[in-house]
Structure formats: C-alpha cells, structure tokens
Length: 292
Image (tube, rainbow, N blue to C red; front, side, top):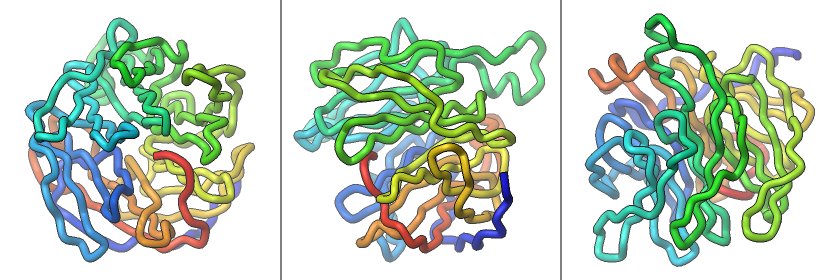
C-alpha cells in the first residue's frame, strides 16, 4: 500500500501517563489514563478536569442512553457505571470470555456495550518473557440490564470499535491480525456476517474512529502515525506524530479535529513511571460520524 507523506500533528496536552479510549462528549474530549487512575476531559481551549476518580485502571468509555457513564475496569475485567450521585457500581463482567485485561469499548445508541480484551499478557510478551504467545479471544456484549454475552469469538486482540450512524454495522480493530473486521449489527445487538473490512499488513490497528465518508482513522501502535483507511485497505490520508499512536477521536465543534493519544511505549512497567504521554491534534477535511 502507498505511504502518503501526510501532515504533522501538533501538541495539544501533555503530562499523561498513558491516555486511552478518547471520546468526544458534551463539547469535550474525554479519555482514560490507566496509571493516573482517572477519567479526564479536555476543552477545546485545552483546559483539563478530572471527571472520575477511579480506584483501578480505567479503559474503554461510553454512555448509556440515559447519560450514565460506563467505564471498563481493565484489571478486574468488568464494566463500572457512574450513578447520578457520582458513585461507582458494577454494571457487568467480561467473565468468562475475557482472556486477559479489559480494553476498549463502544456503547450503541440502544445501550449495548461491546467490550474487547487483551486475550493474553501483552506486557509479558513485549518484555520477552518466555512461554508467552499470542492468542485470540472474544468480544463481549453487555446489555443495558448488565447481562453479559459472547458477541463474537476468535478475535485477534479486539481493540477499537465503531458503529455506523444508521446502526447497521460494527467494525473492530484486530490489533494482532493487522486488520479491521466488520459485522452486521442486528436487533438486540446481535452481530453476524463477519468479514474483513481492511487488511493492514505492517500495522497494529489500535484505537479507531469513523468519519462521515465511511473511512476509518486508525491509530497505529507499531508506528508514529494515524492513518485514514478506506474500505478495502487503501490508506488515503496520514498524520505523523512524535510518539507511538494508541488511540484517536474526531472531535471539536465541527468534528474535524483529529485528537490522537500518544506515548513513548505501551509497556506498563515503563509507562506508569513517568508522565510522557501526549494528546496531539491535526485538522482534517471530513468530520466524524457514528459511535463512539
């Protein structure tokens, strides 16, 4: 596939440990910081506030139709819910399908939460521990009543997920398979007709977001770049960064600002020791669409 020269992202915020799972909500960019134990938000002027103090390590974010926030608690493989009084309660669990830590999540307009998980000990693999191998795992669906279901088996590191504006399709980044897969999304949140939306050899698609033309921006965890991918796998735009890219979101008042969360590394033992993570931005031509 052709490598486009692209444009350079600009620094927007710094001082993160490891930011993940950005969402544009109520005029602000929300994100989790694993090792700062909280959910934060940034205004368009860069003002930061801590929205939720989290006792563990927060990951995926999404909102139920009634406005309550859901947060993936990655270490204990569950999803927590923020009640109107600010209290945290358990909304649902990833058991017995999660092979390792909880990960990213997208919540549909009907309130179904689709939650990925690592499937294996990624940090141990990256640090070279013997006997660690890559394995597939399941995407989990948690319904509004908190019941858990296996949404799809045999996913290669289910990561960022998007839902089309009409609710008809769901696409998911399979990080260790270098591809994005798509499902038809039916009544009750049932996924069917799985197929490859884009093969991306040489990429590790991490966080993703959808735009109004049906292209998907992909944070490449193997590179210092975020790429815009058309169905079939053609890279049609590219933003380069100083650090590795782990997540992205289209936001701003016109949804034409690409927010990218970057860090020097995703290895937890290193990332939790220093505030080297960034939020960087680039202006793009096509606004964001769909969910999250």
